[in-house]
Length: 370
Ligand SMILES: Cc1cc2nc3c(=O)[nH]c(=O)nc-3n(C[C@H](O)[C@H](O)[C@H](O)COP(=O)(O)OP(=O)(O)OC[C@H]3O[C@@H](n4cnc5c(N)ncnc54)[C@H](O)[C@@H]3O)c2cc1C
Image (tube, rainbow, N blue to C red; front, side):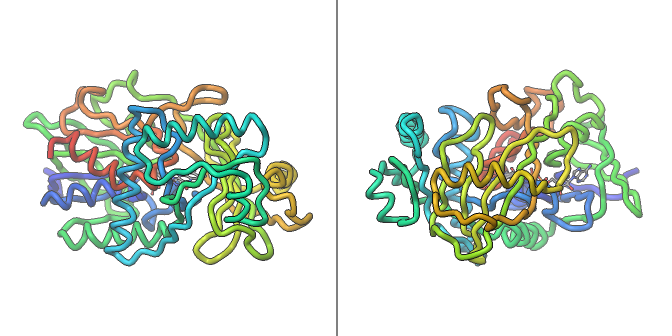
């Protein structure tokens, strides 16, 4: 006999799990979000760029293209309604060589297809009038891109779930589930006081543990669990005045959006993340990586002084592709993918997962038919 029964159980209290819990709570369902750690939002959601992406790059017809644009619109509205801080500072995608200029054209065309508002091509002079310290041959301006307080956002989501009568249960790892004969699932949760739960709907959003969690669900076909890859990225902070007010992004690198510039909400300039595949999550920052950062940043900011970059933090992307392989879409796997009614399993929710989170929540609710 289970200790507790909920309409829906969500595994993981990062931005995406909380947004799923929010979407389900808003539909009047009783929701429990189980979080293994002692705090919400301490996984991938705590170690990223906090950029609200416009949605320029993602391939036509992909979940990323759809959910980034929808999620970004919903996120600004949510931040306004919940007094979560953001700066819709805009972004310049900059070309610093002729090959880059050609790539800007392709990004511009994709942004228009993706229905991203207000993206404009800029000449070198127009871009430099906006950001006088910038070097580029040409640029795109994305006025809808910004930065925000992702932790304030997650706290607001938790508040909404709890206000609707749901529970965000900390230090309570999901240890497995099995389908019930009458429909729904029995769930085993561990921690200091292990409990059993039952639920009609189950959503797994455990970030870097997505594959491990899916493997603990009875009846989940092993063949439909994608391989896990970990894409580490490090950041360096600038000591000194922030040189630009907008986000500055060179065109994407293979497998990621690549090292970019942002001025965070505290006014500090941060550069990163690069991409390095690792066997297991590891958050160290090797100061020796600074050399490559200086070389890369000086392409668009030639005046970067020697000695100005300080090692900052690292994040790890839950990737579904290895080095050199094409970057796949988000995986939002419903019964069609794994055969278990009432279950949605998320895999590979890397960038732009934070921006897309509210739209992912809506998509998950839709796939569960609620
Ligand atoms: C370097 C980097 C930069 C990025 N920059 C951006 C950006 O600027 N903009 C953007 O939109 N996106 C960005 N992203 C992507 C974004 O951060 C992620 O897509 C998003 O945070 C993923 O959220 P999540 O809730 O899926 O995962 P997480 O935040 O990792 O949450 C998963 C949670 O599940 C918990 N968990 C794991 N196993 C269990 C279990 N068995 N039981 C219970 N709980 C469990 C974990 O403790 C964790 O709290 C970036 C990612 C990285 C790595």
